[in-house]
Image 1 (cartoon, rainbow, N blue to C red):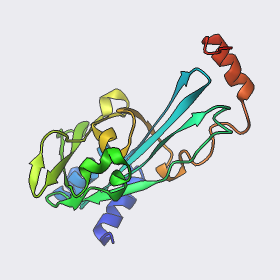
Image 2 (image 1 turned 120 degrees about the vertical axis):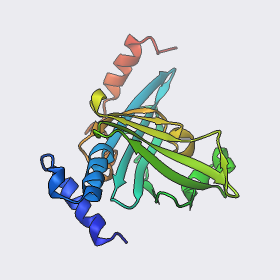
Image 3 (image 1 turned 180 degrees about the horizontal axis):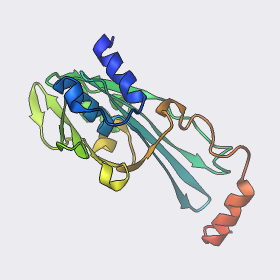
Image 4 (image 1 turned 60 degrees about the horizontal axis):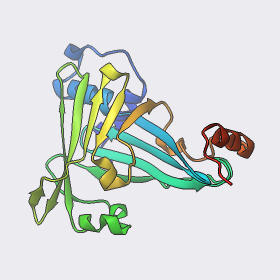
Length: 221
């Protein structure tokens, strides 16, 4: 359960107020608000890969929530085979999440062990750390994996945030841990709870897909 301090910080952040005068609030609160301004965002990416007879649609979304005490990462990701169109074949991805506190180890999320390719992460622990430029325009979150309290250096999923690139984010190595397929995302104003819950199109667009396949020479007899 979040503390009253964390709930108040999240509320202040949600109001999207103009920059607060640091001299009017305690330094630790000013720092937390700056961290939230950089990291607390949602990101989305949707890709489609064509092949003979059909194609795959990949849906990825990730949200970061820092509350002054812990980091909560929510994500939803899946892909589905499309033999008709994105409307008819749509599959809604499940919403997953995990929460980490700096300086504390926590188990790797159980969903990461749900498939054979993730068995190597079974019984591993995870920690979180972050760095941020003083002006709050650039920073990164780094997740580290541990086995029997020993750091495993071969994989450190890292989230880079950069205001200078219009809120693009790089999720390096995160796909191996949480099934996130791609590594670069664009910010979305929509809450992650609302993305990929319905098809992109309101009705079947099979004819348009067939025409596109023809134009791309992806048809065969």
